[in-house]
Image (cartoon, rainbow, N blue to C red; front, side, top):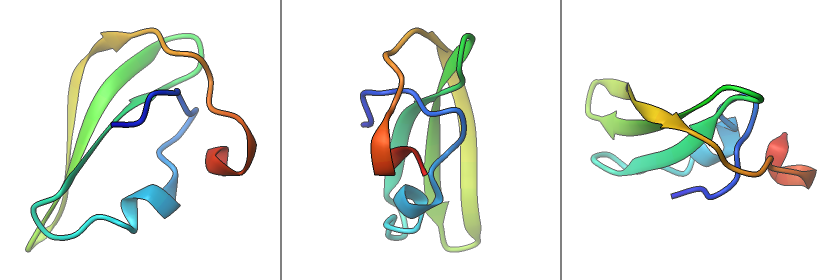
Length: 63
């Protein structure tokens, strides 16, 4: 679970997912959504869960 919002999904976090692992993170600037990304044998599955409000991600992690 990422606890700061990014304007996009940071690819370096997605690249760390093993098969059947998931990443839950807030995405967006002013209007944010909590999303879950799961890596399966056939690729990535992205689900939008609910609207949220988190502090913005800063620094190298944002890239």
